[in-house]
Image 1 (cartoon, rainbow, N blue to C red):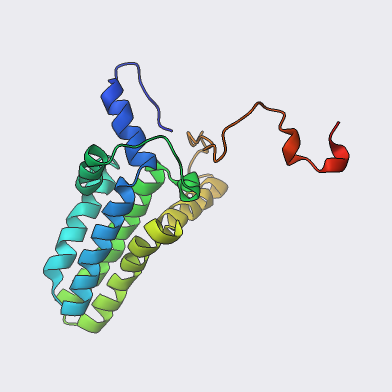
Image 2 (spheres, rainbow, N blue to C red):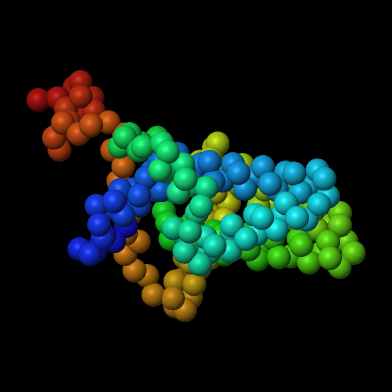
Length: 188
């Protein structure tokens, strides 16, 4: 969950929850992946520029996701979570997009520099992550972001702080003591 302030409206809180757990971000990532695949197969950077722009927006604010916002408005989030939602984090998304902007810049610069094969090979990295995030639930950028953040904390260059995470209930809770989860021999 996010830090919800008292000044946020219920509509803003609902949109925030829909962006975090609804299908909007999956559609956003699939849209970005589609544009990147088109860029790679057509060797046309204009498709990559669209993704670069969308990624820069998300690096600035994880809430600036135009495709996900449209999906969130059209498809109402019903409060049901998927197992892939367990690791979704808006701060992680922002960090992942910042890393993706760096990688996309390197790929685009290589193409501009006269090395299109290397440039488009570099662009396959964020493309793969854009495809894996909604389908497998693994975001390479988020992984690198967390790895880098933890490395900086271990070095003392960054202070560890509360990550503002929340558990997502896959099954409805029937109380804290759930005897059906214990082995039959230990049930009392």
